[in-house]
Length: 444
Ligand SMILES: C[S@@+](CC[C@H](N)C(=O)[O-])C[C@H]1O[C@@H](n2cnc3c(N)ncnc32)[C@H](O)[C@@H]1O
Image (cartoon, rainbow, N blue to C red; front, side):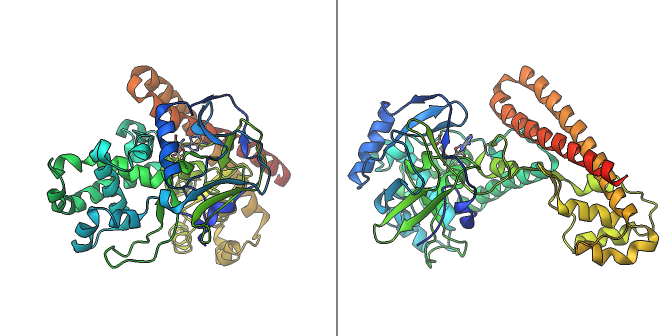
């Protein structure tokens, strides 16, 4: 039995994170009367899906999601989706693409096989047996790869780098897949260059990246060695994320169904939420294209450049200190969170704050020991300065976003997303300042 929550193809262990209410107490508009959902439900029923108590609806806070028509208790089954409804690499191989994939060398990745299938089925339109599902998939996405460079530029530095990497990854996948796409020409009347264009691949990649459940499939010779861990789960993939709920999700081998069970309660007519994993807002934006308000896992990253700005270039041991931090992986993932500076950030600050006479103690610091009151105090004071710098930087970016929202109407939804990320970061930094202020008062 594989164990996962929706959207956690990159993080299978994250299925059972967090406790809390399963429902979202906000107004919604029921969408179940819309033709596209009626058709989807019919399609699912033909494949063995027994109608659940979930209905598609638009929610104020989270957008489209699923509402429950009956109260849910901890231990209740939220949804059970038969294997026949799942779209996996097995589905792709049994389609007309299968023979071409099996012959192609070097073998394509499971991810590319799924993307190719989605693009081909979308192109097939009415003829596709997957049409009812394809019709309810988002037309566009807000993953960083889909953001304009002007918007990417406004992201916090470490995220900006990852966003650019994501864009490049899809560009490289597109370039390296061109020959494979051309090999599929006998299957299509229209040119494969037109069907499998860059924006089609970007859409398919985002569909797989933001919507798949984790389901491990044995390696098949016709695929490259990348893990085959994806399954698209129609209807179930309408469930939105909350960092404050706990669910269990797994494929039930006996029932041949993918099931999600709740560990929380949800009132009738509320949105049913699941947890994609204990992700911070950077990860949520990068992997899923959204930001969660008051996310307990969120943190603000301090780049090595920002950190080192606060230490004198004249320090004779500076170079050695930086090497130590680098060698012991203490220059990355340094953060401020709701509970103040992280232990990793404070450790890096303590190493950089070592006086010449204390330098030999750096190992003890990495192990969590205190070297001197002066060293502790200097690390905290520097943390406070960095925090203040980040607050000012964030406020400036928020002003810039405000301006751009007025000037560039077309970028507004994407700008609103980045604005939300910075506003959440600002709240975390302000909380950290408060904590540091108390700590600094305590040590002086
Ligand atoms: C698996 S889908 C969930 C259903 C999706 N809302 C839809 O309309 O198809 C995952 C996507 O839903 C959106 N989403 C999930 N949880 C959210 C939340 N708490 N707030 C805002 N958007 C959310 C994000 O766009 C994410 O990529």
